[in-house]
Length: 252
Image (cartoon, rainbow, N blue to C red; front, side, top):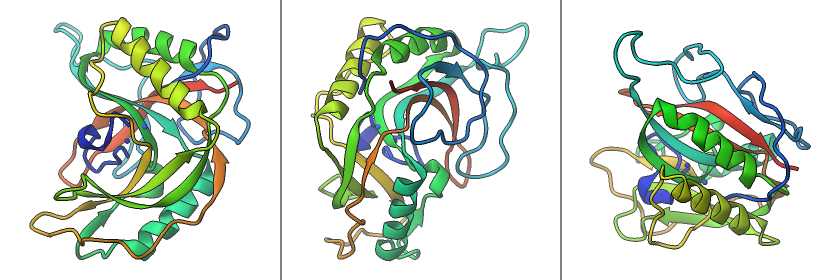
């Protein structure tokens, strides 16, 4: 995903999401794009681009590559999201399989499940360094969350099937506000007018299909902590978007 669901990338989790404390930033390093452990290291790192939804990943250096060596760098379709631990993604997959009729919904793969916090849209590749600084400042205590039922978004003419997420101690709202405010102050993001709504998208409506009015299945009421604050690039493909992490800021 959160900007909110309406602006989440295609294939695409609404995504589907914030920010957190003002502790000192640690140095950056190159790390793989795989999920972190439940107690991530307190560092911000640039990560190589690897596929997280479909198709092979294209390798990159520690930062986004320019489109050509002679021309200006290509714009990147960017969003900031909360990465989820394995147990949370497994619970979302189980909910997706129980709730999403594959004839109606296009399911998202486990590695594409996340909580979108801010959808930036197309930005110059040079903005990545600025965004990294914002995320480093925003990442504080890991948000404590819980699965909170099924939701269809938008409420009218739904296009995505999601699991709502509860912010158990208010840290998610604090993280999202720091991310949103920091990105806006840096001039790389225009905050959404609608209130932030925490959710993880598990499936997207297929073309020419109509979403049901209600969802009978519900996700397991699992409690968990957010894994990392991550800047993703969304690369569009005929069969859906592929999300590649560019920068990861671990929680304290």
